[in-house]
Image 1 (cartoon, rainbow, N blue to C red):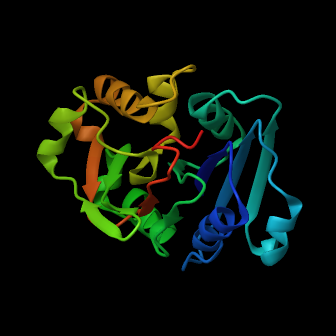
Image 2: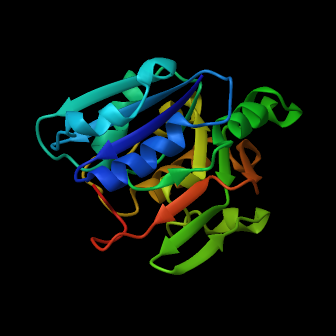
Length: 212
C-alpha cells in the first residue's frame, strides 16, 4: 500500500481538479490511498462530483484550525495505512506512473532491502517557465545545509518517519528538509536512494512556496 498525503489550507476548483486527476488517474493496479487533511479549510463537496471515487480509498481529515503543514502531514501519517508514504500539495500533480514506480522500487527491487527514503526528480513550473530538479548521489551531502526537496519529491517508509519523529510542529517553511535530515541522522546514507523517474510537477503559487 502506498499512502499519498495532501494537506489543504486554501484551494479552488482548478487546483483541486488538477491534483485529483493526477492521483485518481494513476496508471497502476496497485492499491493506494489518498489522505486529504483539511487544515482549517473545508473543501467544497462540489469539487468531488467530477470524479468516480469508488476505485480509490480516500480519507478526509478535518482540522478545526489551521495548524500548518507539519501538523497536517503528521495527522495524515497517523491515519494512513501504507508501508510507504509520499506527498503532493494541492495544486501540484503526480506523474501518472508514480505509484507503480514506488511499488517497484520499494517492494519489487533488490535495493528495497535497505531503502527507507527515496528522492525523485521533479518539474517546477512557474507560469510559462519550467525547469527540472535532478538529484545526484552527492546531493545527500546538502541535506543538513538546506531544504533540497519539496515533499512531492520524496517517499519514505513508515519506519523512517517514526524513527525520525515526524514533522516538527510549528515549522511552516523548510519543514520537509528538516525531517529528511533527521532521517539521515537516524538511518545513515545507505538508507537513501535516488530515482530519476519524475515524481510530478510542482506549480509555484503566487502565495509562495508553502500553501499551508
